[in-house]
Every structure is written in C-alpha cells, then in structure tokens.
Length: 108
Image (cartoon, rainbow, N blue to C red; front, side):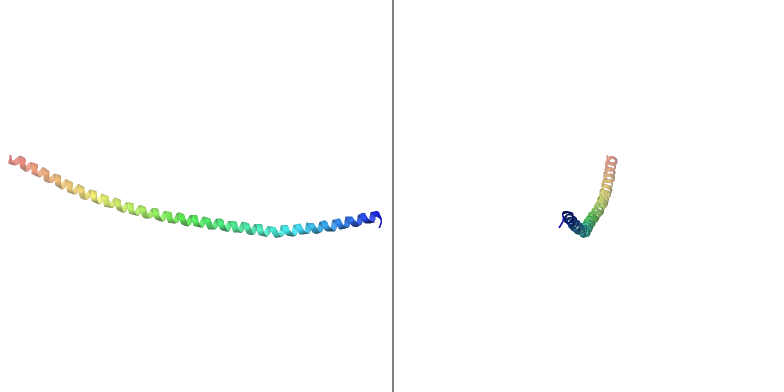
C-alpha cells in the first residue's frame, strides 16, 4: 500500500470510530436525562410529602391551641362567676354589719 492510501485508510477508520463514540455518548446522555428528570420528580414528590406532613402538624397544633383557648375561656367564666358570688356574699355581709351597727347605735 502506498503511503497516501494508508493515511486515507487510517483517517477513515478514525472518523468512523469517533462517530461511533459520539453516538454512544449521545445515547448515554439521552438515557441519563430521563433518570435525572425521574430523580427530580422523586425529589419533588418527597418535598410535597414533607410539606403535607408540616401542614398536618400545624393543623394539629392549631386544634390543640383552640382547645386550650376554649378551656381558658371556660375557666375565666367560672372565675367570674365565683367572683360575682363572692362579691354578692360580701355585699350582703357588709349590709348585715351596717344594719347591726345601726341597731347598736339605736339601742345605746
């Protein structure tokens, strides 16, 4: 074989093999792309699950706080009722003391 023919042959072999390698890289890149998008989908699904858990936890906390507010309001009403009863008792006692003092003054 002549030297130019050998160089042309080697050049053809080089071109063919490089194209084959490029095709393999393209195929592997194309195959890798869906796996990346699948991973992104999985990540977004996990993020959504975490967000849902956070929301549920916050809803539970809100419900507990609402229950505590109801309980405190009930206790406040009971305290007010007790205070009114105590005030009524004290005012009737005060009236009785005043009445007794007036009677004592009249007897003297």
